[in-house]
Amino acid sequence: MPSSLLSLLLFLRTSTIFSQSRTLDAPVPWSGRFWARTLCAADHASGHFSCATGDCGSGSVECSSGGAAPPATLAEFTLGGAGGADFFDVSLVDGSNVPVLVVPQGGSGGGYPAGGSCAPTGCLVDLNGIFPPDLRVASPGSGGETAACRSACEAFRTARYCCSGEYGTPGACGPTEYSQFFKNACPRAYSYAYDDATSTFTCPTATTSGYAITFCPSTTSLKSTGYGNQMAGGLPLINDTMSSLLVGSTMSSAAGRWPEGGTPMVRLAVAMTALLLLRHGLP
Image (cartoon, rainbow, N blue to C red; front, top):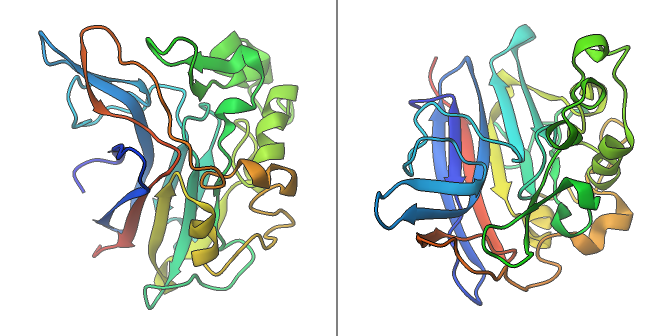
């Protein structure tokens, strides 16, 4: 894997459920993060490529070593970490642009090892229509369509919301009304910088073959894991009050216009699934 950062582009197929999959073999040890870019276009004149959410600043489809500009939902991994364990999480600390599901895979390539902290995590809820209005990011040229949800840190730039300055320790920076919104919707995802206790998951490196990372998972994606909405660490994967907002519970696609001077290349639809299988490779 050439970089510790990898972004997936999600392609639209109108009126169909489109899915794509890719397998990556990561060396052990390895650390990195994955995210989706949406609402992307290439400029007619210059060919410069950019995305409304998750843009990596490279000006092209390949991200090279650039990270995701917020807001973006992040799947973060450390493989072969302390104590012979993998550590992984799904983070909404930088905001949210698409739902993401991460499911550990067992040594045979299916299922996941037993253990309370070795369990699926993610944010399966489409937050774009339900978050507080002051966190909203509008789609370029869409006439009001929502592209993503910012974090309170990105929206207000204060030490309290960013867990910085005098709030730069776990004891000083606790949940806020905004992070609690994220946590209520997605109980296992990181909702603010020090949300470690309920948001970091671990699996033994030796008996875990890899991780299935699903962007825009449908209700069938969750059922296919064989896991359902079981508890892990005292928390469900989905808050029951949010189940009607799962991607795939409705089949409408995102509509909208493209930015002036741009060529539509990538578009996000709610009826779409992208699966990435991250496997343990050789040391």
